[in-house]
Amino acid sequence: MSIKGVTHISVKEDPQPGAIYLPRGEWRTGAVYTRTDSVIEFVIYDGYAYECLKPGVTGGNDPHEDIKVNGGNWKSMGQYDVIATRILLANFAVIAGAVFWNSRLMSQKGTDSSGNPSDTFTNYREDSSGNETGTFHPNVLIDFQNGRLKAKNAEIEGIIRATGGKFNGYLQTPYVNLGTLTANATLNLSSGFNFVCAGNFTYGVKTLYLPSDASYNGMNCTIFARSFSKNSVAVRVRITGGGDFYYPGYNTQIYGVDVFNRKLKLEAMPNSGNTAVTWYIDNYCDFDESDLITS
Image 1 (cartoon, rainbow, N blue to C red):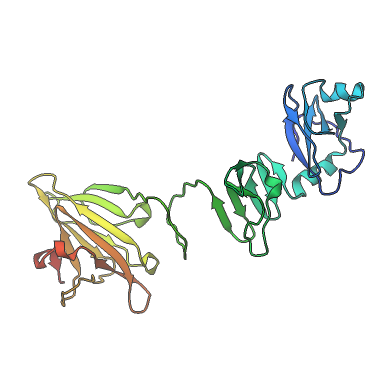
Image 2: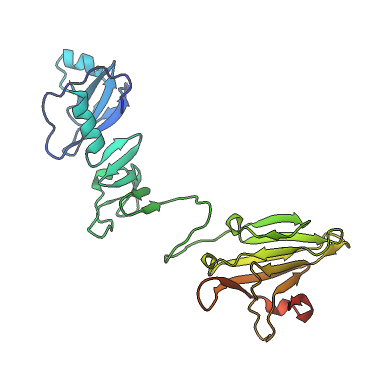
C-alpha cells in the first residue's frame, strides 16, 4: 500500500489505548478534524502526515505552520510501517472508504438503533452468533469468514438459491422475447422465467424444450405463444429427455403441449427419486385434449 505524496512519517509516541487512525486525505482549509478516545484523524500535507491533537480543529494554520508556532492542533506522524500496520490491521481501519472489522468489510454509512442515518461505525458490534448488537448498523456488510452478505440496496443478476428468508415489496420478472421460432430450442432459465414467442407456418411447428435438471426444483415458468398473423402456428413445449408433464385429472401421460395465442404456466416439481424435475401445468383449464401430445 502507498499513501500518495508521503515521503516521511514520524511517530513520537503511541496513541491512547484502543484508538485507531482514520485517514482524511489531503489537509483542506475549512475542513473540521477531530481526535477522540477511539479515533485519531490524520491528514497529508506537503508530503508529510500529521495527526490531529484535539477535537474540532478547523481553519487556521496548515499543520506544518501550526507546529512551527506551537499551535497545539497537529503533530507529525512516524515510521511508515507503523502507520501502515495501524491503518491496515486494526479493527475499524478505513481503506478507500471501506471499514475493516475482524473478517468483515462494511460501509462507513449506516443507521443507528433508532433507524436514523449514522456514520459512527466504531459502534459496530456482534455477538458470538454474528448478530448485530452495537448501535451502528452498516448499509453494506460482507462477512468473508462465513460467506454472509448484507446490503441495504442490492442489484443481483443470475440465479439465487436460498434455504429461507422473507420478501417485502414486489418482484419483477420481465418476459424474454424469443421472437419467431425458426428452429427447435432449449429454454435458458438463467436468462429469465417468462418467455414470449411465436410460431410461423413457413417454419412449421417448432419445439421449446424445458430443462429437467433437479436444480430447477420449485421454479415457475410462463410461456406465451402469440399469434402475429394468419400464418402463425402453435409452439410445442416438451421436457428435455422426454419426460412427461403433470396434468390434473388426465390419466394419459402427456409429453408435450401445443401453445397458441395463450399462456402456459408451469411449475417444476421433483421426480420420485429427486434426480430430476417434471413440470406441473398450473393453468390446465386453459387447454383441452387436442392441445396435449401423448407420444
